[in-house]
Amino acid sequence: MPLAPEFNVDEVIITAMARQLHGEVLVSSVTAFGSLAAHLAKRRYAPDLAVLSTPESGMDVTPMPTLTLGQFLTDVQQGIPLTMEDIFDAIFTDRFRIWINPSQIDQYGNTNITCIGDWHRPKVALVGSRGIPEDTSHLSETFYYILNHSLRSVVARVDFRSGAGNGDSRQLLGRHGAPTVLVTDLGVFTFDGPGGQMAIQSLHPGVALDEVRARTGFELYVPPGPIRETEPPSDEDIRIIRDADPLEVRKLELMSGPLAAEKFVAIYERERQTFHATYPRVGKLGR
Image (cartoon, rainbow, N blue to C red):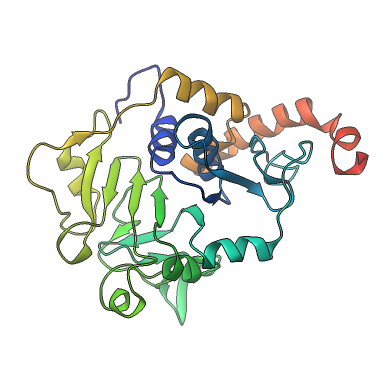
């Protein structure tokens, strides 16, 4: 994607994610992208959000994704503690939002994080449905992001339905839990097409419609009129993202193979030099 030199694709995606969040709700994520989007939203676009970094560190602490010191280096900060019961209460009362990163999403917003291939003889076994069934039956807004928009990830039909989208199951479940938006490395998509199908909301700078069609596993609905361009991140957006993730752990989610391995080693070395020497004195072991 030919982006302007002053910002990167990860910053475009995170900023687009952040601009979707609003209201007095608890925002959580299990990924660097989701956590950084929630943090950016709190700082720039939705000050009433309560941002959960991890259940251990609690709410309203600055995320700093790490590799070896727990998912986020927030143990040195005193956040507002939460229990898992608090989190499920927020889900069941529609005061919870989360950015979900599925392995597959289909044209109606059904999602899969369980397996690739047939359930009885899968090619790949994934993490399982986890909390997605609750999210897709109780939340009035359901957010997804995929970092590699491709024929393998944006598909006509998911191999296993971990989370319910639109269609027959939605008629039984009601509107709460219906898919709201998908952000990918190509654009921002809603589910406002005919019958609840995926539709283009905007394409990122430099992305052409033909490229999106070629990398989508079904006929994508294009609303009438000109296609909008995703608003790029501002200088302040970029500063907040980079300050919150100085090790660039977020970039690992965009990589695979030898490139990811090389990046992992570089991040680990920076993390070891920066944090390991002081962590036992200021972290959990020092309390």
